[in-house]
Length: 521
Image 1 (cartoon, rainbow, N blue to C red):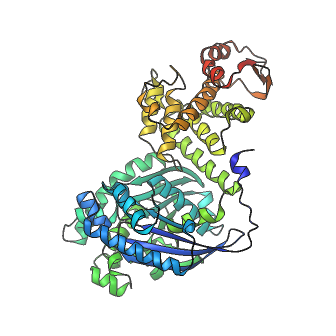
Image 2 (cartoon, rainbow, N blue to C red):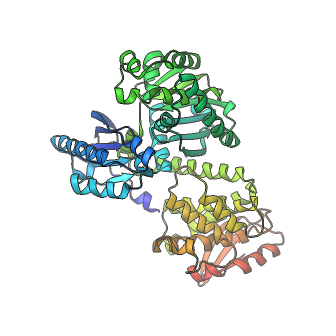
Image 3 (cartoon, helix red, strand yellow):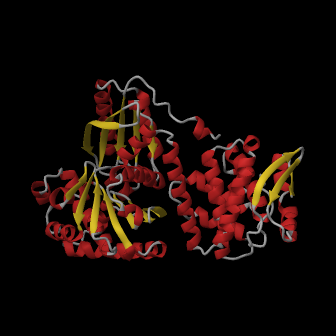
């Protein structure tokens, strides 16, 4: 039994609890308050927002200005007092920040000042975590009311002030997730050309460059469900959309395009007056809706799906559902699917890698008492095994080093940078010399992470050796522990000389880490 299984939330609490999510974005600070029920359901009880020009500061000068710094602190103090009136426990107040603070040079000073002045513990959400929370929110909003999302190819898009989050799914399975440095504030600053047509041409060139590599992962012309998250699409849906359910709108493609054509020449004042939106949101509305339209043009979707959600709801769903085993397994399957598609992009031997991953899982499950790793770490090992030969795309010799380089410069949906660093090290050491204290990338890991790498590498080396010929001949039926021996019972009756040679070469680290000599029966 894994840690996650032991930690399944007991939904026998006697009372509901109030939870607040504070999001510091590129254009404003937004508050969301909800009541969470003992059974995991939740409902909104309040929300508020205030404009702040963090994005314009950061994307112009590289850091938060003194004026915006003080303005944010004042706003957060006011929100803090407001939350005290709700009697919300400090542990149930979750403050997060996205793209603007993510790239600000003085973000650490900002985080410390917020803690000292307001008592709020501010978490900087990276792009991949933002994608994960957005996926949770979209999944919640769609429910089972849009089956095409699970049966055909889909794109999920959120255009923010400083970044654009994109997820590509093939029949409900994650293909890729990207956080692109393409945002409304950045475009508004760079594309001061004077006419809406000039701005559209500027955006179109950026989109053309972006969609080139996206199409290499999933043919955008075959996307049938185009999901847009954000207030810009919400304005369009309120004007020309229809309701799918209480959390989602649907807009016909032609109606969406006609709406964009109608508003593209609006001034900021006209957006505010005619579309009934706050001035601070109207300032970036045209660039945002234009990006949505230009990306939609490259897909084959007949409708636009607009969930009434945001990253704030995604975080709330995460808090409300806790360690839900079914949701967790679905999420892990999406991570693995993203890894598979990354491997395909670099033309891995998929049959070999899947077989090695399967062998790793058999060894992992047989050694739970010895390695002490949890369910998420099992998933990390499975991902590492799936892409362990990804460096072969560059060159066969030293492909472990090339593989680490590719992982260091790639994104896998649902995995944080620290987890990708672990996977990169596991790939590096799946062959060749064992980890050394003189290796910079290895020693840069935390002590606990280095231990994880050693355990995962020792298992992966054995699994890789058992398929040395890339023929998938070794099938483990059972694993037995007999004193200092770990006996692998297989159903193979053919010659395994090649695999035994590989095992002799690569099982030394396994014996050092776990104390077992491996024998094939």
